[in-house]
Length: 86
Image (cartoon, rainbow, N blue to C red; front, side, top):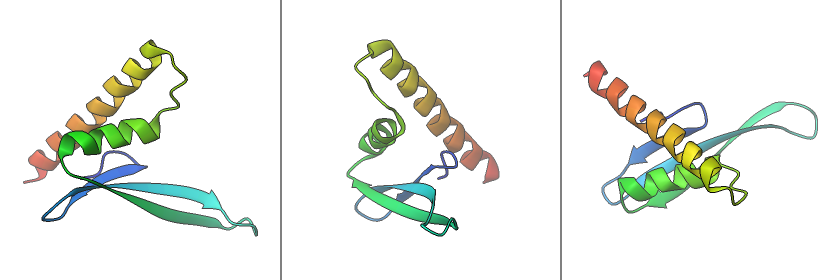
């Protein structure tokens, strides 16, 4: 399930897997892509992982709550898009 350009969630028989796609340039200036996979026991922890890695939490609770709302909105939108494609 694609959340946005940076995150997606996959599933295997035992885990939800958060896949973070990181784009960067190598030392020669070529575009590169790397995937980081984080294994989570349930969907709630997968969503929390996305929130944790997509925010720059500086201690401001309002900023954190806004980030949670935005990330949750993207997850719900991705689920709804997936349902519509069926």
